[in-house]
Image 1 (cartoon, rainbow, N blue to C red):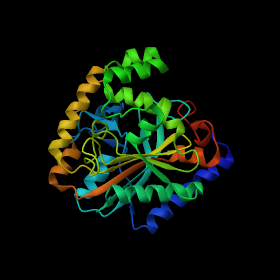
Image 2: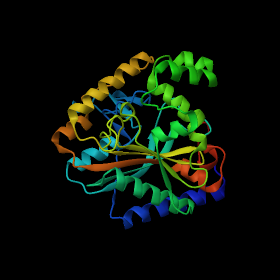
Image 3: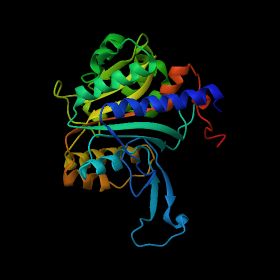
Image 4: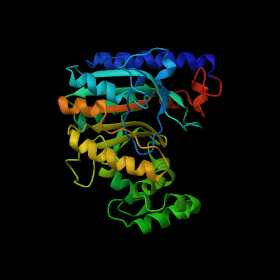
Length: 319
């Protein structure tokens, strides 16, 4: 449980966050925690609630609701209906996530800039985090360059066998479990060898991820093998994830199908692909950039906490 000083620090961080985005012309919104569908991610596990538990009977209700892993779908539906640049700060939920940097329920800051692109998203993210942590700016580093520097490989061109051997040198059982899943192998290497070197002096934006790792991002204008996606790291910890948002519903459906195949292969339940987000994109999602940032992790870095439970009033085991 958070001590009084950390509770006060959280309150101040939330005030700073709202002031920053209000001053940049964003409108605060309050997306629902419960929704009839969710983003189809290959590895995130949404929590569900049967509609019968709501105590009401109405034909408009679906059979079950999802506790949202992100407010993305609802916020993009707002944009498709004409909302301006918007942000939200609120709870999200992800099954199976508990540990030093994870809790089943956590606080996410998410924003969408209408007319924004990957450059404006990176600039706003870097400025916001640097201001909160009182850093003297931020840096950027392409994903391919990071792997080249630390491992001497091109993550786009290297063979799966070589990736598996590299992961096996870190954890043989992990390499056997992951098998030939290229993206998971890259994630293992990123977590073990690349991330600990990032943002040690000041925040760094890791840019241009492989296209296969960005379900909701446009292709990069700089590299056809990569996506207009970045993550922000501070002292080896991933804090934020941003996109130049995909606008084509057909492409989104194709990527959702790929993610469902990965879910099935890993023993997870496939998710409905004809979602409210797909419908909103068909109706016309305006060009925009989007960023999701973990408030609890940012607070941990700000106050020097070692565990996420130290900055939460009631983590899952105390709730």
